[in-house]
Length: 474
Image (cartoon, rainbow, N blue to C red; front, side):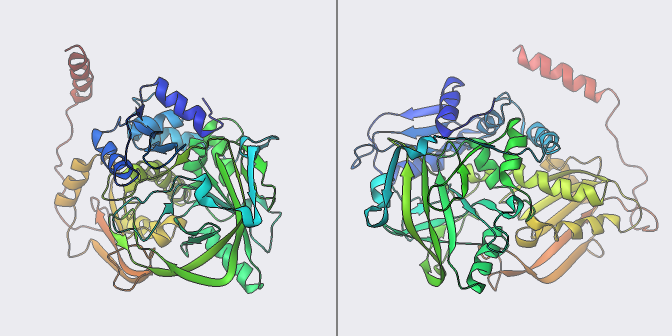
C-alpha cells in the first residue's frame, strides 16, 4: 500500500499495533526524547510514538520513532510487519529495478491550508520544538526533506536534490543547515555562491514514509529521489509546487518552509548528538532565511532521535544505504552477492562476493570506497566469501577469525575523505580507511590452508524448517 502522507501511515501503524499513543501529560524535555531513545530497545517490532499532551504547549502533536523498527520499516514499504531485515533489503533491491518511476503533480496540497509570510513568519508558532539530547546547542529539525536545484541547470529534474540534513533553529526566521560536502545540496550551494546568488530551498516536514526513505538514500547526483520513491511505492510519488520558490515538494507534507540559503553567510551551528553516538562540536555553517511557512491545520511534528545505536536513525538508513551500494557494485562486479551497510550509516560495510582470481576481493573492497556513499562514509570494508551471509554477524566474525591474515589481508589507505561528523578522524573530514579481505584465497594467491572447510550437512536446511515449525507450535 502506498501512503500519500504521514497521517495515513500513522493510521496504518495504529491499525497494525505499531503506534503507541502516550496520552498522559509529558514534559517536552526530557520525556519525549527519552521515550524515543528508549523505544528501539523494545526490539525489531518497536512501535512509533505519538504525543499530544505536552506540558507548556496548547496544540502540540509530536510523532517519534516512525521508522524506528524493522516492523515499521516493513509497513512503510507495504510489506507484512514480520518481514525480516534481510528480506526487506532483497525486496528493496527488486523495487529499485523499477527505478525511475516519474512523480505525479497534484493540486490542492493539504499544507496550503495556512500560511505565514515575510515579517509574520515565526517558526515557534508552527512547531513544538524540543531538544533531543542534553548537550545539543539548541532546537533542531532533523527529519525534514530539504529540496534544492542545481542553479546552473534548474530545469534538469535529475539534478534536483531531496535530502535529509540537520537544521538548527536560530530564530523565528533563521535556521542553520549542515550541508555535508559529499551531499548534493553542498554542490548546489557552491554553484550558487560562485554565481553570487542565494540558493532557494524548501524544507518539508512530516512527509509520507517512503519520501523520507528516498531522501535518506545515497543516490548518484543526477538520480531523482521522487523517482526512487515511486519505484519503492509501486505508484508515482505525489508532489506539488511550492508557492514561493516553485520547487517540487511532497504533496502530503505537514509543513513546507521556503526561503534561501544566504550566499557566503555563516554562523556557528552545533553541537548536536549525531548518528555516530557522539556529539559533534560547533562549526561555522550556512544560514537559511525563512520567507514563507505553509502548514496543515494542527500539524504533526515528526522528529528523529539520534544517539547511541540503535535508534530510529539506524533503522531508517540501513536498507537504503545497503541497496544502492549493492546496485553500484553489482554493475561493476557481477560476482557480488550481498551488501550489509546497516551499521552507523555504513561507516562499516560488509560485502560478500565470489572471486575471479587472486586479489579480486580486495578490488571489490576498494570499489566500495569510491561509490557516492563510500566517499564520505565507508571507513572500513569487510569482504567475505559468497557462502558467508553479511547479515549474519556470527558468520562474519568466523570469516574474520579464520580467513583474515593481517600480514596480507589489511589494506590501509591514508588521507581519504570522510564526513566531518566521523569522530575517529584526527582532522575532521579526512581519515585513513581500511579494507579487510576475509575471503578464501584463490589462484594465484596460495596463502593459508583452506582445502578442508566444514560445510553444512545436506539435511540441515530441512531440519531448520522443521525446527521452526515445531517452535511455532509451542
